[in-house]
Image (tube, rainbow, N blue to C red; front, side, top):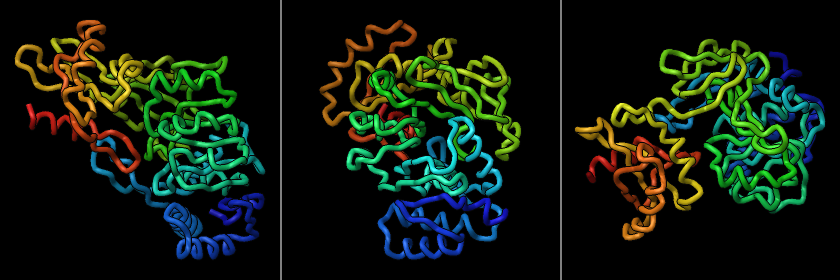
Length: 358
């Protein structure tokens, strides 16, 4: 890849401009030595972005297993950046906010988009209330749901926002309806170089359907799981474990993870959908899971993050309102849920812990 493709002449980093790739690499090396923790991760990526290797190594989140390192071609990362730019009509001199960790793909790709398309990038620490401390306004930003919750009062500073790294619960989605920001839920993974599909969360185009980015198409396998075909992003026929309702080759509705599906008495249940029904009534972290059961095969359970197990009683009335096949048969508590570095709840770890208690 030619250096010019890696660095657009209009790119700015917190107001700083760079005429050559050598200049920005020197800046990154200095930042690596003297910067804050989040800046060190950014500096390391910039140095790797401008080296002679055709790829960069990135780490998966580990939400469905042990985190692993994979190689992504820089040419594919540029294709992904421009696909996002095309979808949102973004180009040179647009203002953008980086408030995600550059240790992971979402943060890295914000850098790639800015570097290659010439954005004016404002970089801040990846804190929960990242934008509340600044008066800047932005054309584009990406956040995780936890950050959005804590920046609702300042969200109007952003024109277009993508949310990834976790499911947007109904309570948060309801709060976003009054915002002037155009908000989109993103679907993707490290292997697809962040998002390959988006759905509008608010405004007149609000929908539960995800639509493909340019040059991406979808299919399903025999399990009803999504297959992604994104040859320009290095992902041809990528079989996922996400159960979907496929509308056509360019759109789908996400139902849940196939490895989370619970078969209780012959009825296949998606815990993510049951969790959506409960989120309005349960304000502590929780998951719907299962335990082996001789009669049903699998028994639906609710696990709450509670310091005091005696508080369980107040949640029994909540679950009694659900349809019988959606109703957890038992409630368990943990004082603290295990989570990944990016804040995703480790469902399998929780399930193993509950098995040990049962």
